[in-house]
Length: 320
Ligand code: NAP
Image (cartoon, rainbow, N blue to C red; front, side):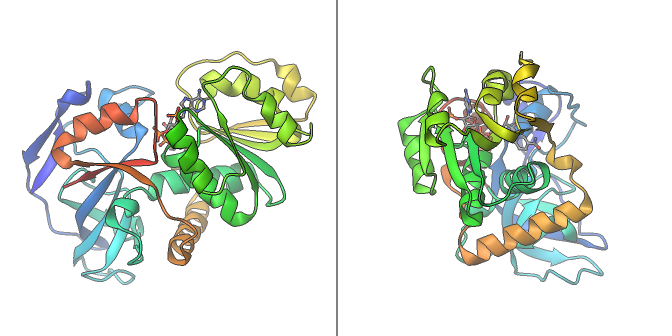
C-alpha cells in the first residue's frame, strides 16, 4: 500500500510517498482502509522534532482519519468488517491507504458524515470538548470566547459550545473564516488581526467579561485574555508557540484560573465521556466538521505548510 514515510526529522519535504507493507490486525485490532486523513498542527511538530516531540523514525504520520473496516482481529466485538469509522490514533499512522488501530481507537461514523469530515473529528473535537467541560468546567449559561475559531479545534469548539447552550464570542483572522464561524452559530465574531479587538468582549458582556476563554495562541494573547475575564473566569491554554508575559494581578483581581491542557493527558474515563459525546453529536447532526481543503496524500508536505499558515478555514485533509 501507499503511505507517507518520514525517515528523519525535518521540514515538510522529509515526508515521502512510498510503498510499504501493512500487517494483519492482531487480537483486539482492526485494519482500516483510510479514505481521508486529518492534518493537525501536532503532526508538524512531531515531523520536525519540535515542541518536545522526538519522532521515532522511520514512521508514518497522522493521528486522525476515517474509513472502512477491512478486517477485524480476534476478540473484536464492537466493530465489524465493512463498518464506517472515524479514527483517533493508530499503531501505524493514518497518512496511508491502510492503518491498524486498536478497537478502542475506531468509532462509528454515521452515513451522513463524509469520510473527509470524519477525518476532522477526533483531535479537534476531543480537544474542544475536553477544554470546555473537563478543564474549564463550563456551564451552559456562561459566555465562552473561542480565541482562534476558524481552525480545526476552534470551529469544533464553537459547534460544541453552541450545541450545549453557551453564548459564544469567537475570533478569526480572515473575512471568509469569520463568516464560516458565524455560520456555525457564534453570536459575535471578532477580527483578531485588529488592534483593540478584545475591547468588544467587554461591551458584548455588558462590562462583566467572559467566563471562559479557549485559547489557541497563548503566546500572543494570554496577557490580554486575563483583562477580559469575568470574576471566576478561566482560560484554557490549548495552543501556544512561545513564551508570553502576563500581569498576575489581572488574574488575582478576578480569582481567575489559567489551565494548560494536552489531550493526550486525558484519563480513560474522560476519554470515554468525550467519545460518547462526539458519537452522539455526529449522529444527531449538531456536530458537523468543516473541511476547508482536501489534498491528495502525495501532497502531505503542502498540507503541513498550509496547516501552519494564517487564514485557517476548518480542517485540511489528505485523500489516499
Ligand atoms: P489550525 O486549524 O491551524 O487553526 C489555528 C487557529 O489559530 C486558527 O483559527 C487561526 O486563525 C488562529 N490564530 C491565528 N492567529 C491568532 C491570534 N493572534 N489569536 C487567536 N487565534 C489565532 O489549528 P488547530 O488544529 O485548530 O489547533 C489550534 C492550536 O491548538 C494549535 O497550536 C495546536 O497545536 C493546538 N492543539 C493543542 C491540543 C492540545 O491537546 N493542547 C490539541 C489540538 C490542537 P486565523 O487563521 O483565522 O488567523
